[in-house]
Amino acid sequence: MSDGAGCAAVPEPSSTGRLLLVAACALLDADGRVLVTERPAGKAMAGLWEFPGGKLEPGESPEACLVRELFEELGVRTKPACLAPLTFASHTYPDFHLLMPLYVCRVFDGAPAGRENQAIRWCRVHELRNLAMPPADLPLIAHLEELLT
Ligand SMILES: Nc1nc2c([nH]c(=O)n2[C@H]2C[C@H](O)[C@@H](COP(=O)(O)OP(=O)(O)OP(=O)(O)O)O2)c(=O)[nH]1
Image (cartoon, rainbow, N blue to C red; front, side, top):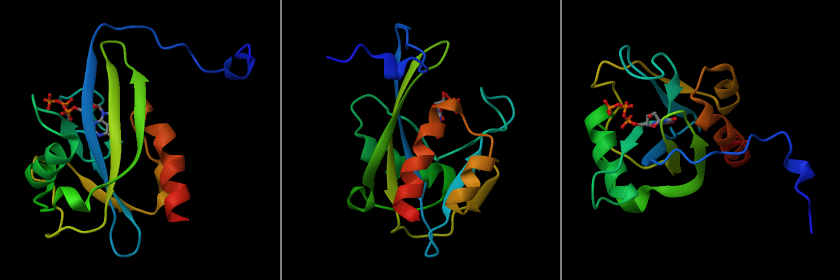
């Protein structure tokens, strides 16, 4: 049995008492670029670039949450069947533990535009590493690189 020595560099997540379930989506354009949005001033982690999405409402599935959030945040219409699960983030923040499935969506209607005053940008996947992103998102980049390169 392993003694876990190979995991020594990874900090042990502690229990925070609160699990936050957020669904996120990498929208892809026809060139394989990824859409990211900037967290607005006044919010936690303002100025960091993230994948569109948000907190699940009570009783809501991650897919329904994303269909709703993509329309509310970006004016984009899609369907649950167009959301493909890719991976997930599990990250302990000081106030909560984030569990965040990341989906990929290539099929949607409408040109994304920031409807909540957030900046948006389309990035090549290798450019994601040069963006300031929330710490929970950093392990997700390798999965997108594997998918898109
Ligand atoms: N949408 C999204 N949220 C992320 C990402 N990475 C990450 O750590 N988060 C965190 C930031 C927030 O704590 C939480 C998302 O919550 P949210 O977007 O619904 O809420 P918020 O903090 O912007 O604030 P509010 O809507 O409650 O006012 O997940 C990501 O890539 N996309």
